Length: 612
Image (cartoon, rainbow, N blue to C red; front, side, top):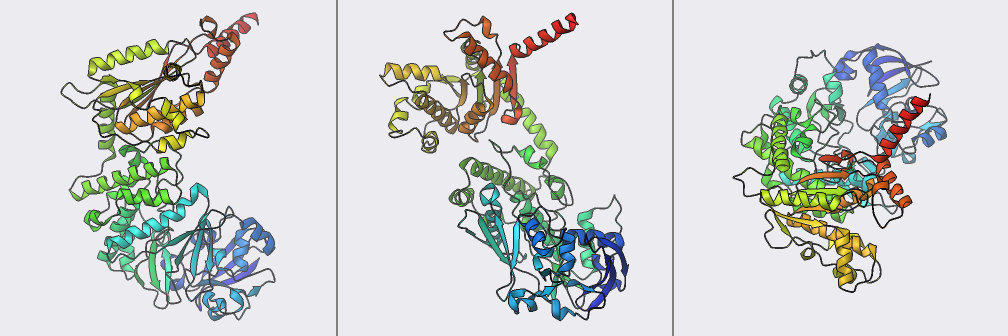
């Protein structure tokens, strides 16, 4: 065990005992509450949490290597050996018996001597990264006059870094007085995205996270944390009206970009390090976990799904956060980047087309929600759920009698050869025609020979799909039936060679074109595997419409097909192993008949029981 004095600049705050091996806190005693963390309300339990939050996450890339090189076991021990110095505030640890002052450990002072390296315990140095939280690869660049935070992102095509730049662009275009951090980004040689921003703290100004503000006093469960936060900030020197205005703006812009990382360490207050008075809100920063960066979806969120996404913040969902906004007009909708600009930004940066569409769709819906708020319409998850429930009913049952616009749908019919897919489709088409749909010829969407013309050297399905555009005709209430066998026959009639790669290139092109045109699609094929079904849904894209999968189960031994019996059995097994579920992207799944593999296993199980 070793004793330290927790210092705020050169003011002793508390005596702290840390374990020599782990660096974990063992005891804590306040000396002067005015200068302690948590706005002066620190105690042993709170300091333990403060100490844990201050250490770099052990999961951070390269952190384990750093620990080994420093000769320590834990990030807490590493933090202790670096005296807990940080760029964002003026707290540090002074070892018992040491005559060190803040002048000696000040990061900015250190940066001017030996590139910021000042040995300590012969193991490491006063490293500001020892107190840097978060999960991306981050470090402080102290080579300039102002410390620069550098964040490197590799996962999800580096989108987190791109999101930081987009947020900066949005704030800049608003042209108001709300403070925010400006980020820049560039592509690194190894393919990652590096984004940079200047520190917003210095020797006279430090950051107090919202977590410390809220935890600085006892709050009843019935009290509103959002309002309490504003009140506490005002009690410690901030302008209350300015705080409310800032929180309104931050909440709305976080909602706009679908930022799920609104936890209480990602925003807070600025404080004068001499007077210890709060001067106002810290600028908006750390918006990387937004714009659905980690989501792997084949289609956009519905409006209700957007409101149900979990966030970290004062509340668990965004609709609850929005109830605290007093002035929705603080965000100027006419001063936001257009959807086309958003799409262009992410597409040029290498984000996949499907993800770009999901981003753009969510962005448009969020603008619509905020517009409703500005017109006095409350954002309501219940209302959106009811609306979707009604729309789903109309899509399943057909539109109301007085409706002239029937819902767009995508229906996939799957099953082994001979399971009755064509007969089933005929029944669907007849029902749809009775409801008012008009069946059109699939050939008009994309003639079979076009796949050959677009594939001089090799078949590139994605290139073909990217070349398609919505035509200028009206396709109101049209339904099209697409089937690989029809394309095979079409190719044979035109003297084109048999080539299944070209057949399915045409299949996907017809599905995509119908999607762009707003037509309802019925697609029938074996579609035995999950990957096949997901690939078809991806080709259909982000168009509106109810997505339904119909699986026709049949006994392969009873099918009279020009396919060997063992092949039919293998196909039935593939469908059984890759049983469909809504995780593939379906709104509805219907099964017809019994899975013969499951039926056989159940039968064998019963016979085994009888024999026993």
